Length: 121
Image (cartoon, rainbow, N blue to C red; front, side):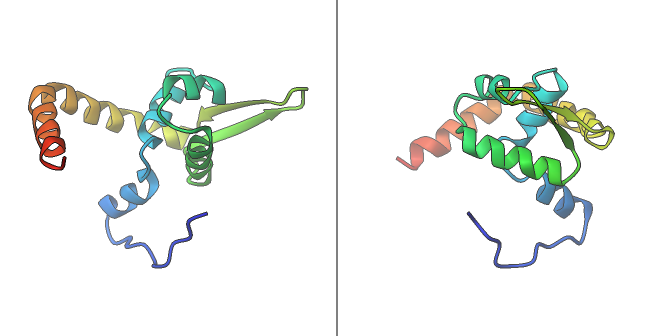
């Protein structure tokens, strides 16, 4: 597993939020958990491009940052559910605003991203 070799820069809010949300799937995980998709298998279906291992790692990091809580039910087979903490719920308006910005600039962003991908091939 990856182990950080340098101490993170935590001098401002942007550094802190970057540290907490760094990870390809974390914002989507928070959004989908907020929408009611709580079981790992449901989250996997919502994000099929992500491996189960990566999702588990990122869910664990979100749990360590107290944004989600994990409930393990004592049944066979084991049942696990995730939910947003009150602290995690405070991020939903921020994620919504970022998503709205992306929607408003969708055409431009898509063109720029595809142009960059084409130039790298």
